Amino acid sequence: MTERLLSVEVAYALPDRQALIALKVVEGATVRDAIERSGMLERFKDISLDSNDVGIWSRSCKLADKVREGDRVEIYRALTADPKDIRRRRAEKAKEEGRADQTTGGRPNPLRAKD
Image (cartoon, rainbow, N blue to C red):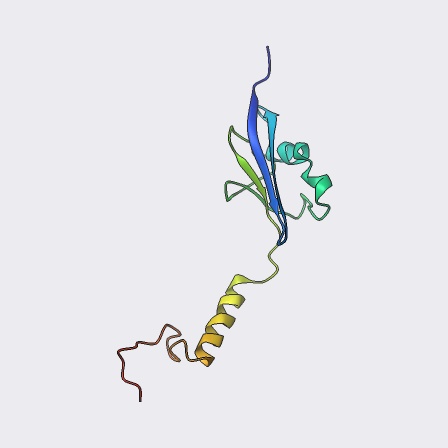
Protein backbone atom coordinates (compact mmCIF):
# COMPACT_ATOMS: atom_id res chain seq x y z
CA MET A 1 0.00 0.00 0.00
CA THR A 2 1.47 3.36 -1.02
CA GLU A 3 1.28 6.50 1.08
CA ARG A 4 -0.80 9.33 -0.28
CA LEU A 5 1.20 12.48 -1.01
CA LEU A 6 -0.22 15.96 -0.43
CA SER A 7 0.87 19.10 -2.28
CA VAL A 8 1.54 22.01 0.10
CA GLU A 9 3.50 25.25 0.09
CA VAL A 10 5.62 26.84 2.80
CA ALA A 11 5.99 30.63 2.75
CA TYR A 12 8.26 33.07 4.58
CA ALA A 13 8.90 36.74 3.83
CA LEU A 14 11.36 39.38 4.91
CA PRO A 15 11.03 43.07 3.97
CA ASP A 16 13.50 42.66 1.10
CA ARG A 17 12.90 39.07 -0.06
CA GLN A 18 10.52 36.15 0.20
CA ALA A 19 10.41 32.43 -0.39
CA LEU A 20 7.55 30.17 -1.41
CA ILE A 21 8.47 26.49 -1.56
CA ALA A 22 6.11 23.92 -3.10
CA LEU A 23 6.59 20.38 -1.85
CA LYS A 24 4.93 17.03 -1.32
CA VAL A 25 4.40 15.59 2.15
CA VAL A 26 2.82 12.32 3.25
CA GLU A 27 -0.77 12.36 4.41
CA GLY A 28 -0.80 12.96 8.16
CA ALA A 29 2.22 15.29 8.11
CA THR A 30 2.20 18.20 10.53
CA VAL A 31 2.93 21.87 9.98
CA ARG A 32 6.33 21.29 11.62
CA ASP A 33 7.04 18.39 9.23
CA ALA A 34 6.24 20.58 6.20
CA ILE A 35 8.44 23.45 7.42
CA GLU A 36 11.37 21.16 8.19
CA ARG A 37 11.05 19.34 4.85
CA SER A 38 10.86 22.65 2.92
CA GLY A 39 14.41 23.67 3.87
CA MET A 40 13.28 27.07 5.18
CA LEU A 41 15.08 26.58 8.49
CA GLU A 42 18.40 26.17 6.69
CA ARG A 43 17.71 28.94 4.19
CA PHE A 44 16.66 31.54 6.80
CA LYS A 45 18.70 31.25 9.98
CA ASP A 46 16.50 33.81 11.80
CA ILE A 47 13.53 31.40 11.88
CA SER A 48 13.00 29.69 15.22
CA LEU A 49 9.99 27.43 15.52
CA ASP A 50 10.08 28.09 19.27
CA SER A 51 9.42 31.82 18.78
CA ASN A 52 7.95 32.36 15.29
CA ASP A 53 4.20 32.00 14.94
CA VAL A 54 2.84 29.90 12.08
CA GLY A 55 -0.41 29.73 10.18
CA ILE A 56 -2.23 28.13 7.28
CA TRP A 57 -3.76 30.53 4.76
CA SER A 58 -3.46 33.52 7.17
CA ARG A 59 -5.07 31.63 10.07
CA SER A 60 -2.94 30.97 13.10
CA CYS A 61 -2.28 27.32 13.85
CA LYS A 62 -0.06 25.04 15.90
CA LEU A 63 3.02 23.20 14.72
CA ALA A 64 1.29 19.91 15.56
CA ASP A 65 -1.71 20.62 13.29
CA LYS A 66 -2.00 18.34 10.28
CA VAL A 67 -1.70 19.83 6.80
CA ARG A 68 -4.19 19.14 4.04
CA GLU A 69 -3.98 19.12 0.26
CA GLY A 70 -3.34 22.62 -1.10
CA ASP A 71 -2.46 24.25 2.24
CA ARG A 72 -0.05 27.17 2.32
CA VAL A 73 1.92 27.05 5.58
CA GLU A 74 3.12 30.52 6.57
CA ILE A 75 5.92 31.37 8.98
CA TYR A 76 5.36 34.77 10.58
CA ARG A 77 8.02 37.23 11.72
CA ALA A 78 7.74 39.16 14.97
CA LEU A 79 6.25 42.63 14.62
CA THR A 80 8.88 45.37 14.58
CA ALA A 81 6.35 48.03 15.64
CA ASP A 82 3.02 48.02 17.42
CA PRO A 83 0.27 48.73 14.82
CA LYS A 84 -1.73 50.75 17.38
CA ASP A 85 1.24 53.05 18.01
CA ILE A 86 1.76 53.55 14.29
CA ARG A 87 -1.93 54.48 13.75
CA ARG A 88 -1.84 56.83 16.75
CA ARG A 89 1.27 58.63 15.45
CA ARG A 90 -0.22 58.89 11.95
CA ALA A 91 -3.43 60.42 13.36
CA GLU A 92 -1.49 62.91 15.48
CA LYS A 93 0.56 63.96 12.44
CA ALA A 94 -2.61 64.42 10.37
CA LYS A 95 -4.08 66.67 13.10
CA GLU A 96 -0.89 68.74 13.23
CA GLU A 97 -0.90 69.15 9.45
CA GLY A 98 -4.59 70.11 9.39
CA ARG A 99 -5.62 66.99 7.47
CA ALA A 100 -7.79 65.78 10.37
CA ASP A 101 -10.39 67.34 12.64
CA GLN A 102 -8.74 68.46 15.90
CA THR A 103 -11.62 67.12 18.03
CA THR A 104 -12.61 63.84 16.45
CA GLY A 105 -9.44 62.95 14.57
CA GLY A 106 -11.51 62.24 11.46
CA ARG A 107 -11.32 64.06 8.17
CA PRO A 108 -12.43 67.69 8.34
CA ASN A 109 -15.88 68.41 6.94
CA PRO A 110 -15.40 70.67 3.88
CA LEU A 111 -19.00 71.90 4.20
CA ARG A 112 -18.49 73.13 7.75
CA ALA A 113 -17.74 76.82 7.96
CA LYS A 114 -14.27 77.73 9.19
CA ASP A 115 -14.19 80.03 12.19
